Image 1 (tube, rainbow, N blue to C red):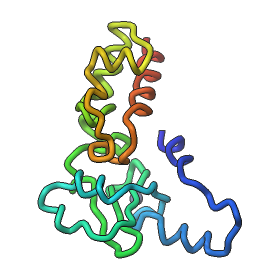
Image 2 (cartoon, rainbow, N blue to C red; image 1 turned 90 degrees about the vertical axis):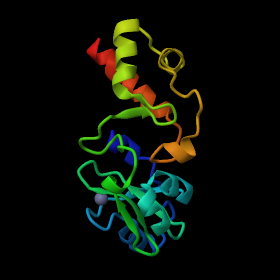
Image 3 (cartoon, rainbow, N blue to C red; image 1 turned 30 degrees about the horizontal axis):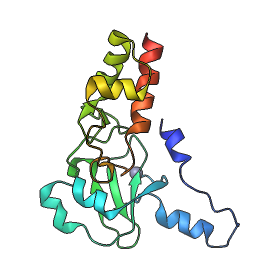
Length: 164
Ligand SMILES: [Zn+2]
């Protein structure tokens, strides 16, 4: 799954000379893997209460390496937040528990898989009506990437279909 998500990162298409510099500068300070841009709003909302005042600057990334303890890091000022400083488990990180498929409505991957296996649903829409997922979408604040949960739900459905 990480591999797929990593494709989201746009490679520089113009071969500009700053490409390598930027890449190094923007990779995770701990594992050196590339991160994905997240908005400060997302970071501010998801870090635990005692870390919220430490959020500064705007240029945040999320480390997509499942083995790395870093969640968010700022590429300008070096501020970073570990996954233990984030109030929700990040679904693609190792040992995420529970593994949410929809953060807005707190529906887990397990619930989606169960809906697929037990109720035979196949589409995100059907899953949503059974599990209540995406009822009150506010992905920018609740999803660790600040993106729509739709994709994660689809991945959980695919998982359920292979189990079935
Ligand atoms: Zn990392």
